[in-house]
Amino acid sequence: EPEVTQTPSHQVTQMGQEVILRCVPISNHLYFYWYRQILGQKVEFLVSFYNNEISEKSEIFDDRFSVERPDGSNFTLKIRSTKLEDSAMYFCASGPPRVEDEQFFGPGTRLTVL
Amino acid sequence: DQQVKQNSPSLSVQEGRISILNCDYTNSMFDYFLWYKKYPAEGPTFLISISSIKDKNEDGRFTVFLNKSAKHLSLHIVPSQPGDSAVYFCALQYNQGGKLIFGQGTELSVKP
View 1 (cartoon, chains in turn orange, cyan):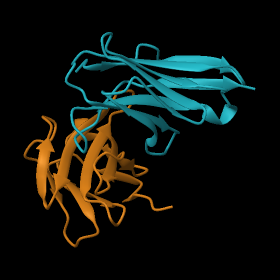
View 2 (view 1 turned 90 degrees about the vertical axis):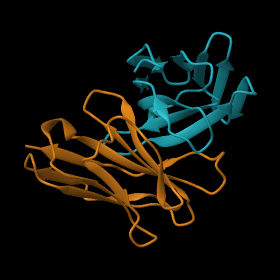
View 3 (view 1 turned 180 degrees about the horizontal axis):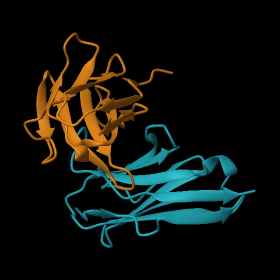
View 4 (view 1 turned 180 degrees about the vertical axis):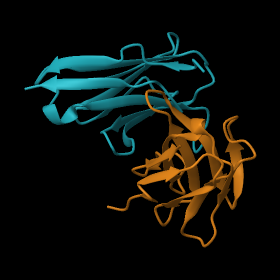
């Protein structure tokens, strides 16, 4: 069964550094998302991406965050100037061409900012 | 952000009995309602969904009920099995393909 994959599974970085979280969505999917879950809190929407552009973003997704689909298969989330409060589990999700279907989530990347 | 609330952080049920998980929301503009299950160290996995034009959707042991007037969503699992033990999230959408807005989750424990 096709699945969304994410790398790395765990990323540790120093505050102020840049990180790139990588995702490989399911191959025929057209809609891409990033969510995050801070420990003990809700899963929160960050950004959605369709047709090579951001379709929606949340207040969390400030100008330190960016997304890219550089080669038609990977979908990346870059966080510049990381802060302690960026520490969370980051989930990538993708959705098929038929939008009434659900979003499929990857296993997540745990980001720890020290 | 209290648009979606799951008021029970945990639920314990005996194997074979019914599990009922609840979710309340505040905005009547939500159009699609989904349930996801999550095991530790994994991403959420889709279980079942319902659109606002329906009040019930069934898939095997899982049934989702929607009461639009009460802005209430529930998931019934019958019969419950130990493998159902996980955290269950309701997730709502304003439009298909749009962002999911999650509840806080309910941790279900099914005892043998």
